[in-house]
Every structure is written in C-alpha cells, then in structure tokens.
Image 1 (cartoon, helix red, strand yellow):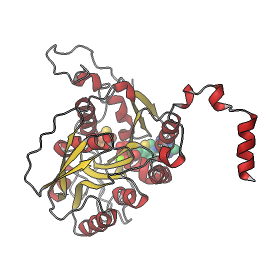
Image 2 (cartoon, protein in one colour):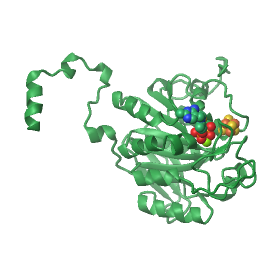
Image 3 (cartoon, protein in one colour):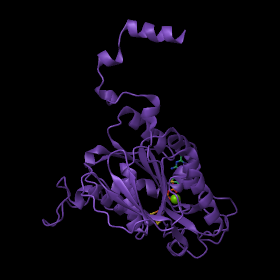
Amino acid sequence: MTYIAKPKFHHPALPVNALGFTHRDYEGAISTLCAGCGHDSISTAIIQACFELDLPPHRVAKLSGIGCSSKTPTYFLGNSHGFNSVHGRMPSVLSGANLANRNLIYLGVSGDGDSASIGLGQFVHAIRRGVNMVYIVENNGVYGLTKGQFSATADRGSKSKRGTINTDSSIDLAAMALQLGATFVARSFSGDKAQLVPLIKAALDHQGAAFIDCISPCVAFNNHAGSTKSFDYVREHNEAVNRLDVITPRAPIQIDYEAGAVEIVEQHDGSRLALRKVAADYNAHDPLGAMAFLQERAAAGEIVTGLLYIDRHPQDLHAHLNTVTAPLNSLGEKELCPGAAALDRINAGLR
Ligand SMILES: Cc1ncc(C[n+]2csc(CCOP(=O)(O)OP(=O)(O)O)c2C)c(N)n1
Ligand code: SF4
Ligand SMILES: [Mg+2]
C-alpha cells in the first residue's frame, strides 16, 4: 500500500476560510515518510498557505518528479489536480500543462536530486522561459529515496552518514534561478514555518516563475554532525535577510511597522507584500547584488534565507509567446481552423 487515506470526519468547530473550507480540506493522504522528515513540514506549510489564501483546491495543479520529496503532493491538497511524473521531468510536464491551460495555479514540487542532477536541464529551461508557477525544491543534499547518496547540492567538505567527504562543488539552485531570470527567488528552511508560509503565499500570488529552495533535512541519511543540511547546522548558520507578510486584496490593509524597516511590494493581482528587512541594506530588487551576496555569505559559511529577489513587474511565458487566454481544450474548430484565407495571409507574411 503506497498511501493511507485520512478519515474524513473532523471537529465541527474547526475554523473555516472565506470559501467555507477547513484546514482539513487542503490536506492529503497520511504521510509515509520517515517521522521527522523535513519534507512533511513543507507539506504542512503548503496546506496552511493555500488555506490562508482561500485558494479553491480545484484551481491548483500539483506536479512532481520522483523522490521522497516528489511523493509529498500525495500528502497535501487531496482535492486538487495532481501528476507524479518521471524523475527530473516535472518542469516539462508542468510547462506543457501550463501552456494548455493557464487558468490553473501550478505548483511544482521537486528534490535536489530531481532538479539538480537528472532534471537540471529541465529546471534551467522552465525557469529561463518564465513559466508561471511555484517551483519548490525540498533540498536535503542527498538522494533520500535511494538511501542517501550525495546529491549535487551537497556542500564540498560535508560528510556522509558513513563518513565519506564530498569533494565536488555544490550547485546553488537559488543562485542559478537568479541568473536564469526567475522573477521571484527565495530560500527557506523546513524548520522555520514563520518564514516559509508567507514565502509560499507570496510565491503563489506571483504571476511569473517563482522559485523556492527550501532546506529540508533528511533525518534518515543527512542529519548527523559533519552534514551541512542537518537541523542543527541550518539553525546555527541561518541568516535571514528579511521576513514577509502577505496582504491579499480581500484583507483589510493594516500596516503599522516601524518606518524604514518595512517595504511594501505591490503585486499584479492587487496583493501586497510587506517586506520586513532584517539585513537593513539588503535590496530584494537587485538580482546581481543578490547573487554576489549569496556567494559572499556562502563563502563565510552562512545559509542566506528569505525573499532574495522579486521583480515587481513579472512577465510569463504566455506574455512572451502571445498565446490565447482560453484553455486549449475549450477552442472549437472555428478558432483552430480559421480557413484558407488566414493561411494564405500567414504564408504571404513569410515570403
Ligand atoms: C530515470 C531514473 N533514474 C534514477 C531513478 C532512481 N531514483 C529515484 S529517486 C532518486 C533521487 C531522489 O533524490 P531527490 O530528488 O533529492 O529526492 P529525496 O528523496 O531526497 O527527497 C533516484 C536517483 C529513477 N527513479 N528514475
Ligand atoms: S529517507 Fe530522508 S528524505 Fe526520505 S522520507 Fe526519510 S527522512 Fe525524508
Ligand atoms: Mg534530496
């Protein structure tokens, strides 16, 4: 048995959101991951973010590859669309679905093996094309599902459970996403729900390629002394540049933060992000500065978290390609076959 359904009953007094849904309506099957796995905390954060944003579950499409991380969509949003693809192939399946129907909210969940090794090319092209999605990598530095081999995000010098030292350079997926033109880039930690939930909410509101690299310790294979992806290590080396609050167009706008410490970022859909600066001189609108900052702080042994970059005016693949707004399966013969005269005009334009 690969999953266990949760019983449907719940306490009648459970709080409901604006759609009348309870938290339970955003849950999935009972998790079969190891007790204490960071990935389960990310699932909980996704459930909370969708509940708080009042997202209709049927408007969300969750897609993944293969790995413990890629199993997690079974454990959240049980009433949403879902597709568990092949190892490393989530980005192309998500891109295709998004091109066919832009009316859904696309949530891609992947692992560091899934996205930084076999799926690296897929990750790169989905980000550089600006597919409108939330792309979360649940980053534990190992291939958890296949028993803990180092992945490409494992830091040079970190130690495996059996004592081997990793001699390869690591791939920083957040830095890559910045270089590739993602319009929203963040890093967080599965053990920091206060930071992660608003980041997921902001990414879901963002109308462009939103990438979140979420450090998510593997308690079975990468949570020992010498690992740089363990709960203890990340807690000790976590340097947050900012904290977020998300104010949706539906919520009354009440902001009473200290002047100078908070920046309000307006998004296309009318939602506002209140960005509370922790590092006073950090600028979340400068991709080059963010890349330099990430590398500088990584060299000093710090793990930088928070909203690293946001483009206030994002564009997505549909805007680049000038596609029709209607889902492709709703187009009739008239729209799909505009006739010989239209074809002649196209051909004449190519001569
Ligand atoms: C084409 C293919 N190659 C290799 C595998 C074996 N495999 C399954 S999961 C996995 C790595 C998973 O690592 P990651 O994406 O980091 O997920 P985690 O389990 O750590 O969450 C590998 C190599 C596979 N399933 N398919
Ligand atoms: S093996 Fe690691 S990644 Fe997989 S469920 Fe267990 S703790 Fe999580
Ligand atoms: Mg992994």
